[in-house]
Image 1 (cartoon, rainbow, N blue to C red):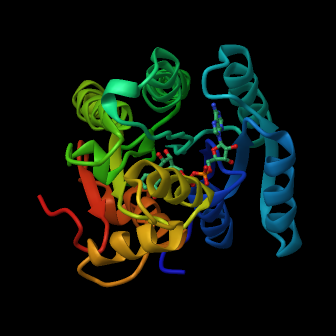
Image 2: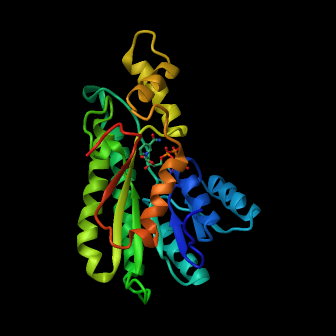
Length: 270
Ligand SMILES: NC(=O)c1ccc[n+]([C@@H]2O[C@H](COP(=O)([O-])OP(=O)(O)OC[C@H]3O[C@@H](n4cnc5c(N)ncnc54)[C@H](O)[C@@H]3O)[C@@H](O)[C@H]2O)c1
């Protein structure tokens, strides 16, 4: 592990599976105290147990990113136990797929609510706490926020994903807005933009996309399309994303704010 996050506290949303799980494990391996939060409490407990199994420090918590009471409870519990929240990772997200003309209002709301409004709810709680913390004397920084956006937060041309694209453009937008607003208070706000990451979300999308493309497409053929659209020639791993999230939370990125960094094997470059 390149960085040490010893005596640093991290909250990771949606970290009971997929990319969030990898981020929680990597922070814990790097010495951080990690609040593993997820809408599914069993997922959170399982990842916390994985961390404790190698001697790491973890606190599992049930937290829906839209539930203000649960978010407040996590902030209170984490700060009561560990004193500070140095890093907050807004990772929780959902997707669904459909032709735009068949898209339901429920699908629109579900994606916009969890992916965009969830970042608003959690960032507000995290930042309310961070602005009250003492800055670190060496860096002058009080805290760091990292959002997991998506390649779809920059590239609108994503089949069957108009609503998801809109929600992830919102995440990139709020990343810039908060970076500007909180820079003077010593808080950096950045995002990572993953491409085709091998997780349960992708497994679901490969099935939906095969159906929506019609013909004889299979989920495996859809995955081949994802790889063909990736110049580095393979599916992304959760750890590819986690490495960049940890970089943005590390001292190496102390002077970076308002960035949305692509980590997608070259699928989208800007
Ligand atoms: N998988 C990809 O290809 C990909 C690509 C780009 C961006 N992303 C983004 O990365 C993030 C993680 O995606 P993933 O692929 O690991 O997904 P995943 O479905 O594998 O895991 C998501 C986790 O979030 C939790 N979750 C769902 N709704 C929640 C809520 N309301 N509150 C709290 N937790 C909730 C789930 O229980 C699950 O543990 C998402 O924001 C997603 O949009 C994923």
